[in-house]
Image 1 (cartoon, rainbow, N blue to C red):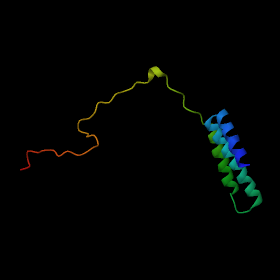
Image 2 (image 1 turned 90 degrees about the vertical axis):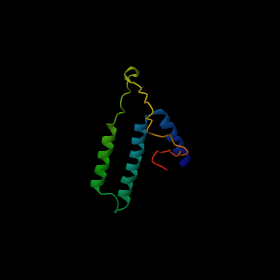
Image 3 (image 1 turned 90 degrees about the horizontal axis):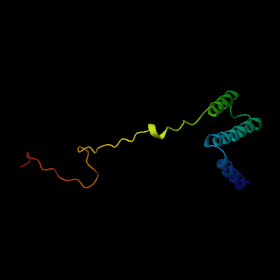
Image 4 (image 1 turned 180 degrees about the vertical axis):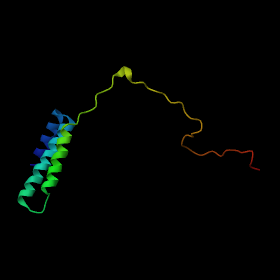
Length: 99
């Protein structure tokens, strides 16, 4: 049974977006919570389940940010700062104050 569920997960992941796949996974967990509430008494409160559904509802409104146009993106090359030393063996700096 576990192998079939894993294979179904891979098939679903290949056909839908990552957000939709996550929502399907969360809905399966919600179903498990509801079944547990029906079978046992000391589990999630109705208020907790309500907030869980509120979170899922909020997740369904999520949209991925649109991609930027290639022409509007500028690549800025930074010049190396001479004050910052590269990692490596430390060299002793000769000072005129030392005698």
